[in-house]
Length: 68
Image 1 (cartoon, rainbow, N blue to C red):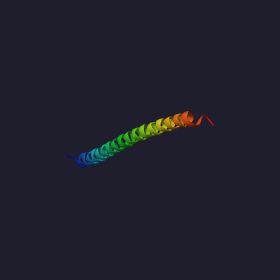
Image 2 (cartoon, rainbow, N blue to C red):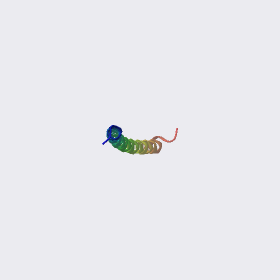
Image 3 (cartoon, rainbow, N blue to C red):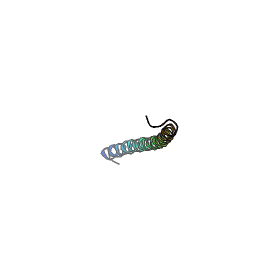
Image 4 (tube, rainbow, N blue to C red):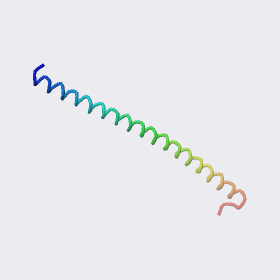
């Protein structure tokens, strides 16, 4: 292998290593995004429960105390 060929091989090896690092980081980002999405879903569910409880409270208040 010539000196230039050896240099190209070394540079390609470096590029491959960097691409592997990028792929690993992208995988981490994807995993974190999945966690965020799951947490957002939980928050949305909890908000729905709160909204339902507030609606029920208003209904009972109106039933017992009348609409102000």
